[in-house]
Image (cartoon, rainbow, N blue to C red):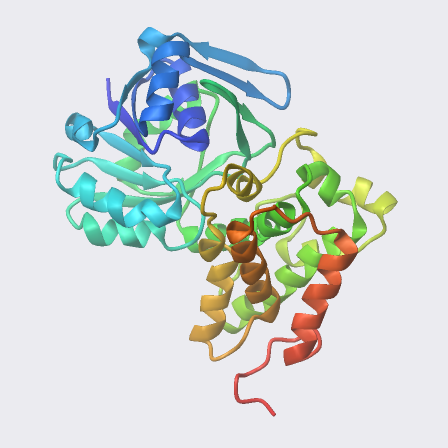
Length: 351
């Protein structure tokens, strides 16, 4: 049986790894001492927004705090925060056997490239986790929204596909993962808005002003992607370019048109909101910051996403966490956009 390792036993890593383990696969975890202690004491309890539940007893939850444990890995799923990707690559490079496959199940669009640079003799694949996972207690992880795992299509991954299918986590395989990653990132632009709102996702997305904030950020990103000749994949029932327009409809209409976006656990929050609540650094630079960097490469600006980056960084440093109303945040983002040009992305040398 193939040996699967989860490098980064946080919420996503424990949930995906736990599901694979519950499905009968040989899965080991590498993570921090806090999580390691919880899994050894409590095992892994998993739940999903549709009331499905799984439990893996503690004796089956094999976990280490040392990357050297992955020396016999056939497949490694990297689920660390983006800031730790370079460290993950360096540690894995020193221990992985030839032929091991590595998958980046991380936010952002460039983490697989970072891993690939550190692991030139291994197959490194881009992956995407579309759903939200929250830690609900010691060893307990809850999937708060729907979606299937997506991954780059390659022969090297085929020996592991059945393991994901048995776990109820079928892999959607794509030749072009760049378009999929950007489509996911467009949705993840809401992470910052949710973190600044300090509300559950369902409550936030049910309010028109917050949705208009997300629409501004998405329109800005879509304009840049068009300039870059990148066409985001369709990862929701709605075509990606339609989403900002649907976000702008009145609340009553959005309940019908945006039903898929509201199919989420009432208590779920974005991972960025959870990071702020726990006093951890966020992944803002790998989400909204990716849009800002794309703009810079194109000689453009992205004032809405740049302002969201600034506001989240301020919240990271604040003694008291802010809780922006939708109207106040919308006014702030509109002001940022108008300081450059109204509703457009403009060249840096524009008059």
